Image (cartoon, rainbow, N blue to C red; front, top):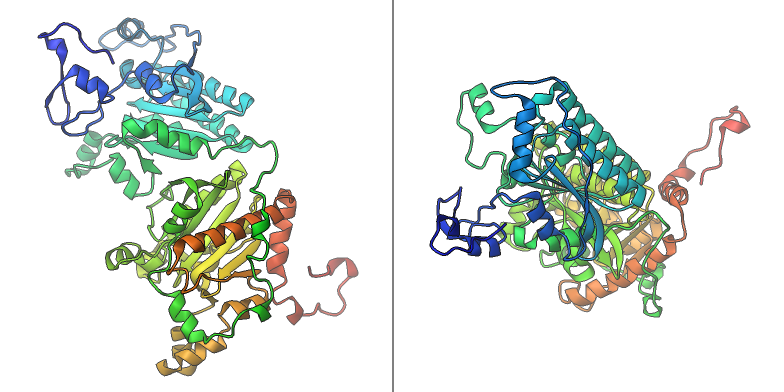
Amino acid sequence: MTAATAPGTRADWHLCDGCRSVVFVRRWVRNHGVCPECGRCGALSAQDRLTQLLDPGSAEPLEFGVSAVDPLRFTDTRPYPDRLAAARAGTGLTEAVQGAAGAVEGCPVLVACMDFRFLGGSLSCAVGEIITRIGELALRRRTPLLLVTASGGARMQEGALALMQMAKTSAMLADLDAAGVLTVSLVTDPTYGGVAASFATLCDVTVAEPGARLGFAGRRVIEQAIGERLPADFQTAEFLLDRGFIDFIAPRATLRRHLGAVLRAYRPRDGRAAAGPCQDDDGVVVREPGRLPDDDAAAVVRRARCVDRPTTLDYAALLLDEFRELAGDRVSGDCPAIVGGLGRLDGTPVMLIGHQKGDSPAELHRRNFGMPTPAGYRKAARLMRLAAKLRLPIITLIDTPGAYPGARAEEQGQMVAIAENLKLMADLPVPVVAMVTGEGGSGGALALGVANRVLMWHDAVYSVISPEGCAAILWRDPSATARAAGALKLRAADLLALGVVDGVLPEPHGGVDADPVQAAQRLRAALRQVLAELAGLDAAQLRADRRARFRRFGADCVTWPAGLDADEVEETP
């Protein structure tokens, strides 16, 4: 962005494409190209974008040699080589993407930044090759890759060869996945077609500027095809966030800070790391049932359901530095009853995932009272896979009456979503610690609970069914709810004796809702202690430990059939 210097000339003013306000250019530049009247993000050149995103003095341009090619000898109203020459003369670029190595808030990063001024940011053979080579350099250096997109799609003048760049760039991202290298996509306006359907939406974390449009087919094409007018916000970042396709929206002035928080959660695969315990951590976790009081089960259930108990987002704010919530299942939506994201626990990057109930009538309703839909469990699965790729410990916080029992949830595959999480968690190559913070309701809780270590607050509960449901089914008497609560053995002391949980955290005086800060301090100490215990285990040992933990439940109820060969019968862990 360059401000005009001749006062009184037309170049002193910028006309906003959104609200049509006339803004003094210097003010527009100071505002990072964002209209101060309506907030619309104006287009930036690739160079301006790199200057805005990278730390001052850190950028090292990656200047690839690019040959002028015309593989189809294409001519429309003018020959393709003439269009290329005009684009190069008008932008000073050799192609529609620029590369750079640099840093974002001190975190090393390699960047491929598209420039819409160059033939609409279209994806050509050269653009695909440059992006792929930058990705390959990120792989060799084990450095995160940032892709900044602005494109109308594949370049028509290069035909099917341009189409092939979608596959090539996608394969490059698969290589980075296999190597555990973090990838981030920054979607800017507009991003369409082959770019949207490949590298723009395949990264680990997808960020968008406010109002950025992202889609495969353009609005006009869709309206012509269906004969209907689409909503005004169709394909905007806000529209897509609600539908689970991007992680978060960041205003342009805050992008560097938000990207820095994401990048700080990355560490190369060069060894295991975990926050070590301190002397004060000893004794914070109760592991003997006899040390716990014999409380009335029905009273414990009431305390576990108290709406004032801290939520997952409360704990995230109290436990983690730079928690960055990530949204969406990338399939159908973003369920607000499960939240998750990246943060640092005493300097150690972790993935935190948990149920979210809310603490007011409006918030409880918006969060569906902490009862997830399939989109919530699929979001959790996506974040777990990301943690596995980046080798980050996973912490889950469980507080739900159960999975949402609605017809729509069943139509969307609630049973499959829960089952898939159980299988996924059993095979994760990273430490997993689950903490029951309130209600642990049936399979909806277990879908976040297949962990190496399972902890719970003293006034939390964990059960196959609610006491009310049990009383209605078995006693056929709602007044038997208190008896059912006792019979279900859902208290912390009962569960510790059964081996369902590995430790119990005493609550502050008056409960965790009376002193959330002290509760978070106790939880931090417990997590630090348990993660330190697991830090010495490699991926295979973590899987074996987790599977053995769950394999033992019910193992003493069954004996092998007589007559089986000895090599067919293995000793149960």
